[in-house]
Every structure is written in structure tokens, then in C-alpha cells.
Length: 289
Image (cartoon, rainbow, N blue to C red; front, side, top):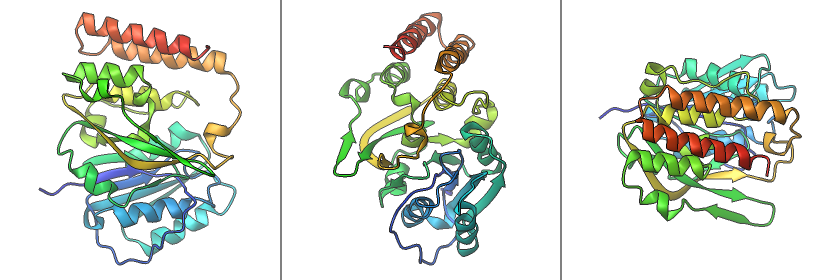
């Protein structure tokens, strides 16, 4: 079966060699987000090369979205796009993570979509392992945090792995905050398009959570495997996760209000909605404790 995948990537600092001969591939890969390609000259090439070395290039599309970088990120992206036919390059004014991701989604043509931050990278068997999940609507896998002197694997709780049905898995992922992470999931572009799933550009924080929640509520099948396929770089002190956050007392209520509305208008049963809304209240309260 011919499958195409869309992938979201961000810049990464890596010492991989990109000099391979590639053909068109099965995945559409694209990097969109201010942290992805926003002043990421130190990291973008490592990120892209790790994907190129993992991807089945004959069916893969890598989309790089430069979100108004002021460094040499654009120059690097242009060169990579010129060297590899499977790479698409988009240049836009700085609009933030949600804006950049939405721009990349509009250009994606693959059947599946994955996201990767610009300073992160993936395992050599990343795509091979992802394909083993089959045609599930949403697949979730693990990741490893990489620090200056060590690394830490983040395992998915056994209670979630043993979920008896999709709702139990969804609620478990949501409550454990594992639903927040874009980079540990594979999405279907058809579900995104049919249900108009997108990133809320008015949210500088929490847009990932709402995208994943809205998408998951549209899924008929969820597969979870405790396999750390993704490397989350915690050494970049200039990344978004390390940047100072302001206006959180206004942003968090808005982010969780959107989540609550998404749950209320979903096709879940009243009992399931109530459980997810209780989880939303729990998560909102936890952000201030």
C-alpha cells in the first residue's frame, strides 16, 4: 500500500551526514513553529539530517517553515531544500508557533503527519517503527530527554498502555499530560482536514494541547507503544521551553476554556464528557500549584 506521511520538524544541532542519494518518500515531513525554525541555525541541520536518514525518502515530504528567523536558519533551509527533492521550504514573517505550524499544514500532501522540534532529532528506525502501528488514527510513542551530561527515557505509564478502549486511553493520555506533546504522535491529514483541526494562533502556550485534544476526539482508534523514538534536546537554553513566560494568568484560562468547549461539542457520551471536563479542571488547577 502506498502511504505518504507529513512530518513537522524543528531545527536541531546534530552531526549527521546528509550526503545520501534519496528518492521521493512515504512521509511528508515539515517543520513549523517559531522554536522550530526561528533562529535555529545551530540545530536545524542535525534535525533534518536525522529525519532524512530515517525516512523512506521515496514517499516522504519534509516541509521546513522559517518563521522570520534573524540568523542563518533561512540560508541553511534553502540549501537543504536545494540538495534534497523531498524538502519543501516556506518562508514567512514571524507569527509564532501556531501560525508557523498552520502554514506548514496547508502545504502538506502526505497521508500522515508528524512533528519534530528544530533542536530535537529522531532515532534511525523512527519511521520504520512508526509504520508498524499500521493505519491507526492516532499513534503515540515515547521519547528521551537529552541533557548536557545524561539522558532520561520517559516511559508511558502501564495503566495507559493497558487501556481497554479508546476513551480510557484518551483520558489517561490527557490526565498524564502526554496528550500535550506533538512530537510523540503520528496524525492523519485526512482527519485534520475533515474536522478542521488547527492550531489556535491566539495562544502562545497551550496550542499543542488543544490541537492534540481536538484531533484525538475525532479518532476511532488510538495505538500506544512504549518505544522512545524521539530525542528531546534539553541543552538548548534559547528554546521556547526555557524562555520566560508572561501573561500566564490570561493565557491559561483561555487555553483550558478552549479545551472545555472542544470536549462539550464532541461526539462523546455525556458521561465521557463529564470525565474529560473533570480532567480539564484538574489540569488547569495543577498549572498554578
